[in-house]
Amino acid sequence: MGCNQSSEEWANHTNGQELGSVDAQTIEEYIDLEQKIAQAEQTSPGLVLMQKRDQKLHLEERIKLQAKKYEMYQEQTKKEKADIDDLDEPETKKLFMKQGLELDKKKAKEMKEYLDAKNKEEISKAELASLEEQHSVLISDLEELEEQAKHLQGLYTRQDALLGRIFGGDYGSQAENQFEHQLDQNEEMRNRIVEANFKWQQAQLMVDYAYKQLQEAVKQWTYLPDIEPDKLEERYGIASIARNNLVAAGQNITGAQRYLSNVAFPYCAPSEVATLNKATAYIFTDMQTPERHKHALDCYSTTAKRCGALLQWINQVVTTTIAKDLEDINKKVKDSSMSLRQERVRLIKKKAKEITGEDIDIQIMI
Image 1 (tube, rainbow, N blue to C red):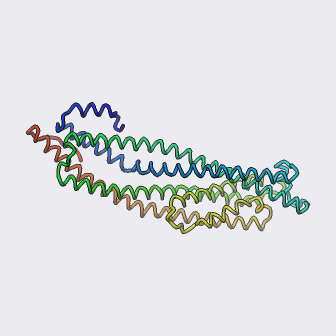
Image 2: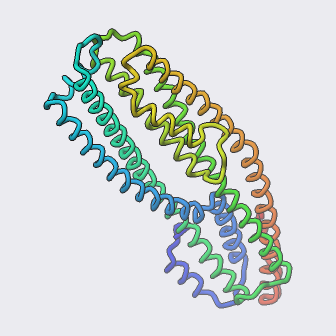
Image 3: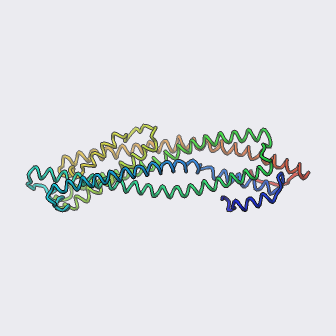
């Protein structure tokens, strides 16, 4: 429970006082609870928890589908491997990438098909690993959010018990009823804005990752022409680094689009990501000639620039529009909460005077 007080301890404390028993300590308890609840509600942990749980279910389904896809590519790679006379993989790469090697067209075609299949398998494996990593992070986030939501629910329970002890479950005044209704409306609006803010910030984070990954891919790809043709493993390694960054970038942009499924991206639309993914699947073919290398570079560079523009656009929405909406609604929640708190303190003091015949002399910041 919140505030380092168990439900049993709270029950013992409340049962120790009769219904309607009101004193200075009662007001202090109420004020303390109100402040803790206001602090805990700012991030809407219950709402975000529901979003994360839904996200977890969708992610687990995607992991299952991706695992099946990876198995399919593994089988395809084995099939293509069998068509090249059981050459080991490093030797196959050398034969395929070595410029000037005279091979018959059938053998060259088989080697190309094998390398393309192997590349798709490695891409699929990287995508699966990325999804599993996201799942691991999500599990950690859920554990923290569950604690926050549990803490807030505990505060609500304590507040209900305290107010029930004082007023017997009834409203102390019409004004209290109205203030509470206004607070509920403002909190409902804040929940909607917090939900939108959460989705936009998640998309912002993923697009930021994608932009950096695309920049790295472009940088690695530009190294290739300067590497001697006979340094085959080095060339393959550089291309692999570029490919892995392109795969991760495509996943992150797609993930951002899922968070903002009702928003049309001005840059890096799904069709653009599909084009990038298609180019990535043939990266080892594109590294073979200057013409194809340049064509691929143009594709990667263009996508990187547009991803940068997308990030700037999302940053603008988050830091101006949504941030302003949050600031405005938080002020409304604070003001309506303050009005409700002041009215309840007035009613508690009135109740105390009815019981004791004396005014409670207590100064509390509210």
